[in-house]
Amino acid sequence: MTPVELSRTVLHAVRRAVDEGELSVTVPERVVVTPPGPGGCGDYATNIALQLARPAGQPPLRVAEILRPHLVSVAGVEDVVVTGPGFLNISLRPDADPTAHLVRDVRERGAAYGHSDVLAGQVVTLRVPYDVRAEVIADAVVRIVATQGGRVEVEHGEPVNLRPVPAPEDPAPLGPDAAQWALLHPAPHDRPRITADHLVQREGNPLFRVRYAYARTRALTRNAVRLGFSAAPGDPDHTDAVVLVTALADHPRILAAAATHRAPDRLARHLVTVADAALPFLLTVLPRGEEKPSAAHRARLALAEAAGTVLAGGLSLLGIDAPDHL
Image (tube, rainbow, N blue to C red; front, side, top):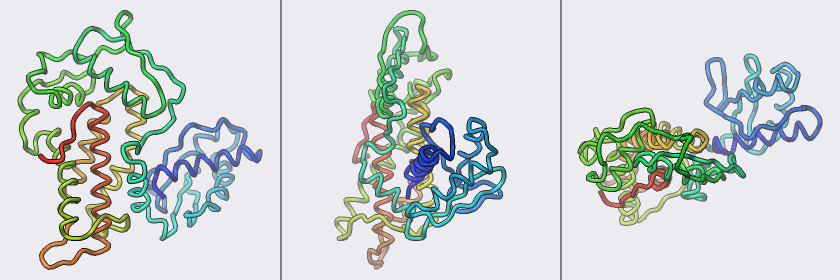
């Protein structure tokens, strides 16, 4: 069960409690699950009981106890423990491998991984000045908001509600991809750098790291075919996988936040996080020397391909090409 699936599971538990008359609250649009904090236990934790306590007119601990049986009864959940003022700590069954479920989710949804309906029916009007950076940001916001079910209408005129710091010079000489990145990666209130650094193929260039990580995932798939094996979700059995899994699991939340706050820079920085988590892990995917491909290698390849899917999808939303060779 992935964090996204578990979030939906908790949301369904709230709905069941409301439907059965145990809670009288408005069901929230989404629920956040995170690794347990200090004093917590299990695989994931959520503070939904604390959020619902005041509108429900009940103490957080009571809300947590109401929700607990609705969660314990779900297939894939081993146990739920209430800690502190009302945190729900969820342990998954051993056969409910969160990494395998995450990878399967990404493989099944492809470029649509992280898409949701949290902005369904909402129409966002952006009024922007006649400025190249404002136009580029607005164009990216149109695509990002659409991933969450919303729609953006872009207009020119006063009062302007999207006025990023303009680029100090024309970014066109950087080429379309580097120019897009130069304008989108900094937060709108930060001045973008229009320099040749965006074109240099080295680790100090975040755009290069993102595109290189994607290209490496494609190369791994090609090389695995030559070695006679393919990807299969499972336990990658490697410590470097943990950071990458965490980054991929966070993608839906980041994408929703980028849409809600009209902030493509959040997505751009998240892609750098995914790439930085992926690059060390990608070195472990293929067998070495006389080593034969194992279940762990197939699981690592599946995780690597999932990372490639997220990187390519994110770059596409930013209007940037993801090259198979770099």
